[in-house]
Amino acid sequence: MERPLAADRVERLTPDAVRAHAPDGLAALLVDAVDDGASVGFTAPLEAAEAASWWLRAAGDAEEGVRDVWAALDADGRPTGAVTLVRTGTANGRHRGEIARLLVHRSARGRGLGRRLLAAAEAHAAATGLTLLVLDTQTGSPAERLYRGAGWTAAGTIPDYATDPAGALRATTLYYKRLG
Image 1 (tube, rainbow, N blue to C red):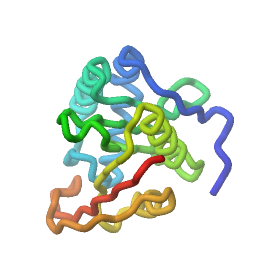
Image 2: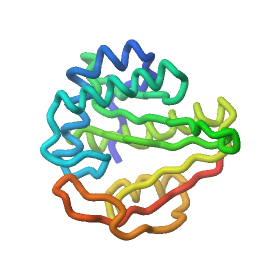
Image 3: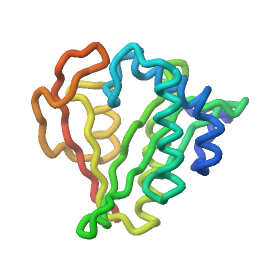
């Protein structure tokens, strides 16, 4: 794996920073992921306005303390990757969170950004008292190699869980990781 470029810095974004990046950088990142076939909750073609709207809602979630957002930023401050950590709202689940929307732009792959974004979210989760993280990803996707390499455990696979961006039903594998 290549070493990260000095310009590839990973930082936690404030809700205002998410809003500032939503119309262009974060929206473009989400559109790129869907165009590349990532199963991240959207079907193709994903319009930039719909992607920006999702990020604006994520900023609202961040303001409410429900979601944290990290971005990998290039030398010009444009997002090249992002990940979110969603906190469970139930009383009996306050110890866990969900990793959601781990994205790395196709032009920035191979620099370890996915691993760095995931590590930042995991470290923050542990530092804020979470002891269990969960996520789901399309079975057989390149993301599975990243999660397994980062110490995540596959809990099971659900057939026909969601459609991929082209609309075909695909299986999803659920993963978990204990922290601490």
